[in-house]
Image (cartoon, rainbow, N blue to C red):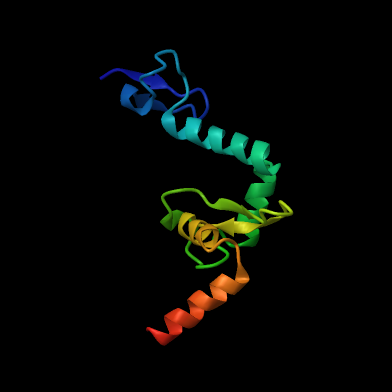
Length: 121
């Protein structure tokens, strides 16, 4: 089995752990995805890797809403932000981040949803 050493994590891995579309890629899929997410957070939210790590530690690596641990999530935590002011709030798991978005970031709609669930539990 052919292997390659990832230039980032420096671990020898099977070729299947590298993207086939770029035969010259020397970064494994995991490292590539992590680098892409770091770049996205910096570009979109102006949050550096160190700031993101500090936020994770401050939240004990748990979602600010449902308290799920980061290790239990298949996706990294999202940087939640106010869509009007663009102020960074906290880190949320994928499900909570999507839920907040689907509820239009509206405390009124969230309260109505809570009342609804309490009535129909």
